[in-house]
Image 1: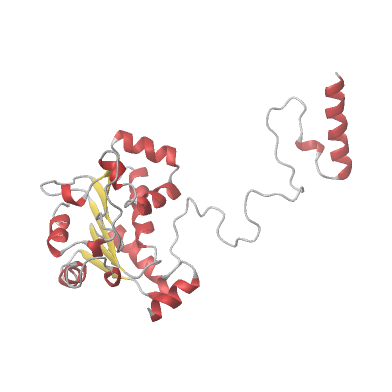
Image 2: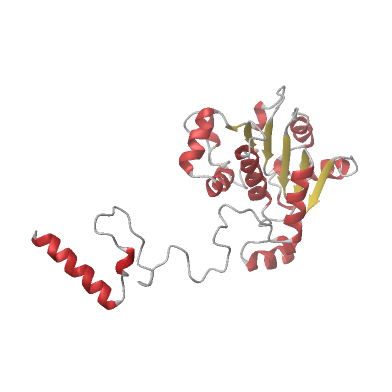
Length: 258
């Protein structure tokens, strides 16, 4: 009884101080709205982005708008551009959007297992564990559109598949959304093999930056493949530029001089 009276006294004090509106509080209610005037908000007050940005996919540049339109209109899209232009994020976001809408049956993610200039040696675990460090950017994009719990559940059900490039030969990917990331680290033969995996009712987005290949000079086949496919009808080759970079402004400045 004493604790109850103390709680009521505290509530009356909050009402007098203007922190709590008594109309928003019911004594027997399990849930009540947070006090609107206590100086705390779940949204950053200094952030001018759309508050629903996690659920609404919007282009931040003309190049990104072109890429999104190309993915909607074509079954095969090559997105080439410098770091920070949102190639991977937009591709994964479009894949999640198609899966949620029931347009495709699964998402297939593929990325070459090539280190950026240094060898990290052998990795423990099964195939997914070994590929996890290389596929981390794809996981980050997935977790930004879905919760990690949902991502793990979809992977357990086979609706999100991790497909190493080395094991793709001979497959036909039907009713799927395929994202091939870091394609600048693929050879011409590898890219030819990957592109010909496209099956019925499927969409494939190949992303990469020809200027950031970790292969020996002349080994990467992305530029050659893109130049050849640019003349093929119904295939979109989107070339993003420095003005499409949406990372820190210094990234665009560095790309221009490095």
